[in-house]
Length: 58
Length: 249
Image 1: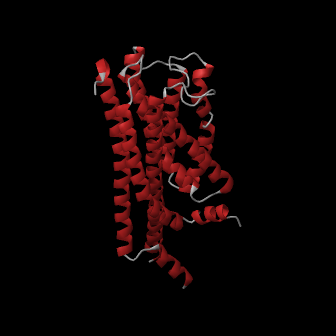
Image 2: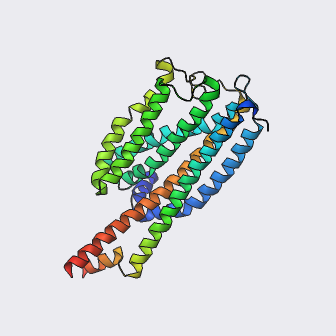
Image 3: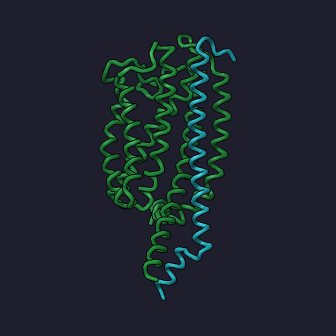
């Protein structure tokens, strides 16, 4: 593919778009991983919303 | 009760919404990858423009990014109504999850637009109505994100952000019609316009394919970010539960 005399502008635009999309995907994936780990830690300590409802009913 | 109303009420339950997201997300991600494969192949085959040459290829990412920057704010405005009028439990979750995505796509629009402008207009930036109103949109996204981060209590933050979002929605028609209302260096509307698109089908078809691909990417990321926000709120309530248990002991 011949991108002509302005190839640097075209390639930079596509690289910038790729970096932004990769950053968004990375943000969502890493955030989920960290939140899941925190929820697992709470569950391991026996602190769950179900436990809260049970203790409120008793 | 009509089926659609029942379904909307069902989705107001975050657990049911999470179950739906878990079922949908892999299908949406697969559809996104497939749509991008088709779109990128179309971009590869698309001919150069008779005036702009190969730089027209920047349009295939610039226009979808601009569309999603506007779409995210419209989505946030509908969610703001959901927060203020109907008090739907997922409305502010949807708004909060959309803001960083809207900011990222608006930034992509500004960067790719500048890189397209330099060889075509001879400048990276000019303070004309379209470019300036797009920059204002980006700054508004940053303001909304900062507000979400500043106010700790999600329900209070949601109401304040909802008002700001609805006020900011006035910028959306300004961006869209800026090229018609003022003399701008930016070209007039060529995709969505009265009388049909002015773009040749050999370039329009790959552009539509990329618009579909980017929109699917947005939906995939938005649902994933909404799931994360629901988890974050669960953690917040568990932390408060833990704190109150510690204080009571």
